Amino acid sequence: MLEIQNLYFSYKRKQPLFEDFSLSLPDGCIVGLLGKNGAGKTTLLNIVSGLLPPQAGKIAVNGFTPFERKPAFLADVSLIAEEFSLPQVSIAAYTSALQPLYPKFDGAKLDKILAEFELSRANRLHKLSHGQRKKFLIAFALASNCRLLILDEPTNGLDIPSKSQFRKILVSSITDEQTVLISTHQVRDIENIIDSIAVLDNGRAVFADTLENLSRRFRFELADTLPTNALYAEKSIGGQRVILPNDADSEETEIDLELFFNFITNKTYE
Ligand code: ATP
Image (cartoon, rainbow, N blue to C red):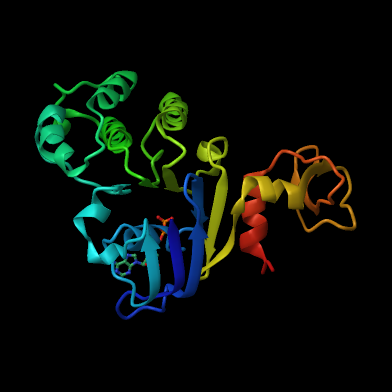
């Protein structure tokens, strides 16, 4: 459903951000898009949602070329940008103006999620806090029932209870046909809800796979001394957090996503 082949993209007067970048994501997955500051996550999400044109390469999202911005494409993609501005109107007015753009929009679902976030259609957007406005955008995006949801740093600005509320609401609101692409550096905020990761580094997708395959291939342990076959290790209280190759007969261990991210971005991974 999302296929990127040999993408090239460069901002004016800058080094290319993506050169020969490829990534393929199937339908119905929740993907964590990870990368250091400036790795290009927001740029990639803008390209995928049709806001920026690729300068070379092919992109297909739900069978469409995003930058052609066909109405049928835009009706099935919902993006929550990291930075946003909203009009000075009530949630009710915003919803009745924009809901017609999304044929699968579910008003009852919007009301339910708004209530869980302690918001209502009567709230005026400019009188809400940043975190409350973010919650409204999350509720609106989920109620749109789009096949592709793109969330750029969705937990930024949410307080601690709201982060876990966000996770619960997201998981209970989406169907198997929907794909969710979540960019974040707050790995802990999303590690229990994603089923795949894509890691960007130096203009490439350096790792993209399901968590199921990841735990089949790697073991995560706390060791007193460094095992000779360790692929990566970091000192920690009580020993060393290590990544080891997993063999087919061994039991799978719980993934330490933060450690895995450091492993992937600190060394060339083949
Ligand atoms: P962060 O994690 O800090 O949000 P990111 O991975 O989302 O970063 P981008 O925002 O896509 O990264 O930025 C990637 C690179 O492109 C950065 O070096 C940034 O300075 C540059 N960049 C982003 N937007 C523009 C722009 N409009 N014009 C020029 N350069 C830009």
